[in-house]
Image (cartoon, rainbow, N blue to C red):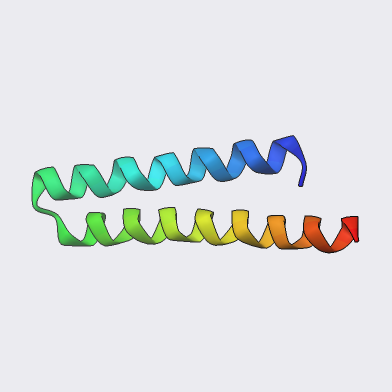
Length: 58
């Protein structure tokens, strides 16, 4: 996993958490759901990269 991928995934996760928080504060369920989805997607990408890295090493 490259450093660029890590930074991109972390930024996407942070963006999702921020959007989720903004949705909760404003009472906007759609924004909250989009933020949660974006954060989960970033976590899944990160997990996929870790799995690929594990198989490359062995």
